Length: 208
Image: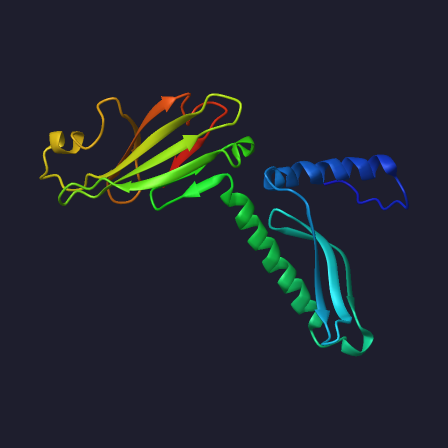
């Protein structure tokens, strides 16, 4: 294991540790931006009686300062302010994730951060009789480049009494099977158009 050594100031060691922490955190922060926040307790007259100054990135809060007016200390006000800051961080993280992530009960899709504002998804019922099916249409429409898209078909193929040709009639012949969900028997297919949507460097899909 080695020996623990304490030093007053060692720039080389400090820089090494900083890089290791940054590398570890990067996988959680790679799609998130820094956002400064303040959380304050104010009197009716608007006087700040307690507050926190910090920065939110991802669902983490970096606290630069937390202050509570002396006569209000030991009343858990600081803890309440920290809790509010954490709630705000989670909210902002969810908003940030929604820009590059889509999810339903069958699969999830992640798109590159460069696609923010240029992609969309719509849902359409594709059911036939007792066969439940949904079509998910994904589109990518960048301003200065060719766009593309894909259609994802989800079919409930659990009823073995239904002939396979009936299921096949519900999807285009050029569809490619992605796989089957880990629950029930929902088969997932896709077809792409234009420059496509799911490709190396593009969007990814993960079945549940």
